[in-house]
Image 1 (tube, helix red, strand yellow):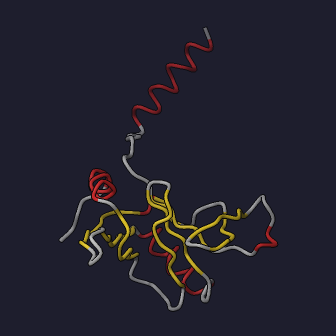
Image 2 (tube, rainbow, N blue to C red):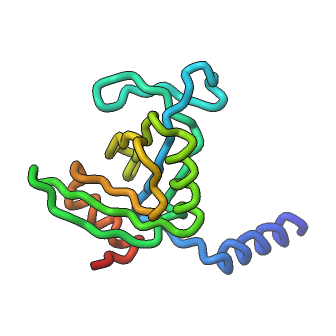
Length: 148
């Protein structure tokens, strides 16, 4: 009887929390020190070279509030992500503390961009210039409103 009550409680909790299924993912991982170890970092082959990134993303789809999409010159699409206050503060902090490193952005589980951290970014916006498909853009628009 207790297991039924716990099951009903969990079902109601999840239903009332407004947990909506997302159509796409956005993750931004900071370049890590290779000596950090496998508990905190992971090694990947990205953009033609071996890199080490932090396992926990600094930014995720929970930090995105809107986006603007663009058509790139090479026929792919680009996007400007607008972040909420938490995301803006996290981006501002990493742009100060991790200057000289890289930020790796993954869209729908695929690497989308490597951004050099060369200046302070306090406006809460991340720009991916190109490389996204039309399908990626449609999925992104289902989760976040496109801004003009």
